[in-house]
Image (cartoon, rainbow over all chains, first blue to last red; front, side):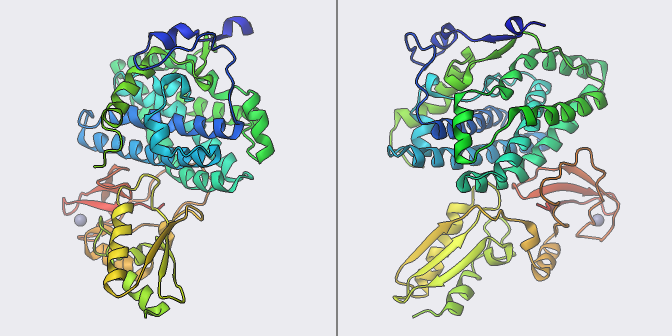
Length: 281
Length: 163
Ligand SMILES: [Zn+2]
């Protein structure tokens, strides 16, 4: 496929359509600010938004054990996000802590990838989304744990252990559902086909990635890609699922251009903190 | 004034809020206890999991115990590296866990390895000792536990996950 057809950036219209986000006129090519802060926000926002998505399952899991498991994953991810956003606030030096960054930024200021903000769908959709993310996340943490930024390496070393458990869990569910009944197979194949277009964004490299390399943060997408491919291909083969073609890839989350789903998520996540600023419970 | 040994002993009386049969020191999350010349105590702790919801309660409990013992001020610090591992739980604490009905953790996996679809060694039942047990879920009532069921005595039980 051609690059032009394989890679599409979301227009600002999607951001405007979402509740709780403020459209920014001519936001193409926005000033990305301090690259290190941007990098930490990207890592933190991925985990905050996915953690919130998973928390939406609390009380709705298909079985009790899985309900508990999804809440455990959510807790790990939100804990990781808190560490990353705290670090981002410290580097930024404008007095914003992790709560300020989580609850008092609008949609266009969020830097998470589009994959994590996609709705939960059925359990199969949630597990496929989780698997695609986890397989990437363990490789990112592995690189960062060995990296030259001590604060980030400490977070990464800890998160790597957690996400290995996550990946094992999501892989096993993808296999169980893919290699399960005709119904479960059809559903996870559809989930994979739907979510695949958000995977390209995980491997895009831009000026932020180039700049943070100077801080010893070497997230080499080209090195991570083949290892991610190997994990994904292995699990999909065991699951008897077909890997979709890399067509119509979407991106934009890293610069604040999100799908319509993020605004709705933020409206729920931020309402209490914004309605009662400074409240403690 | 508290001596170094006093301070460490007092912190060692603070139970883990989620698994109260072992102390926070036995759990391995207390990394350092230092008494300053003025008697103030600095305690360095590390979380078990990034999202462990008990950390604030643990900080409060440690502060309360040291204050009750006469420390004029208590300072809590959190470190993330080196990352906590269940290998820091000693043999005595493991036996306490087992008697409490929680299967103690096995050896933590070496860092960096990603073992998918690994064959799991059955975890011995803490109630009857049988190895005829089955993993029900890798995520249990708290972040640090997995749920198993024993086929011999038919009891469900928690396992402290190797981490
Ligand atoms: Zn038994």
